[in-house]
Image (cartoon, rainbow, N blue to C red):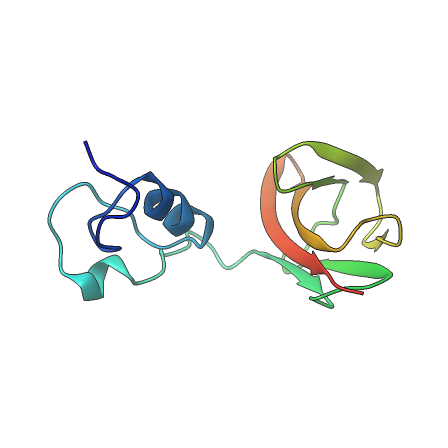
Length: 120
């Protein structure tokens, strides 16, 4: 059993979760530290861009593909849904407390994820 305070290249669950959130490769086998720290390769060039980040009163979402964003869900750090917006790329964040938030955006049945920070 691995402990959370083990070396970051071989260590525990906290490191595994952090690498997954940051989209770094995570392997169970023995690999060099250089390979383990490279970002995962994306299958396509389509992505979700969130700006400004850090935000204050609003965030704007931009999808790099040709389709438009259908549904956007804002989640807190624990994964609880705060609110959902349909057919909009401008999200009012004035009701959110300072902190880290997750975004889930649905575009033509595909889900894209991102994070943003509220700082006031």
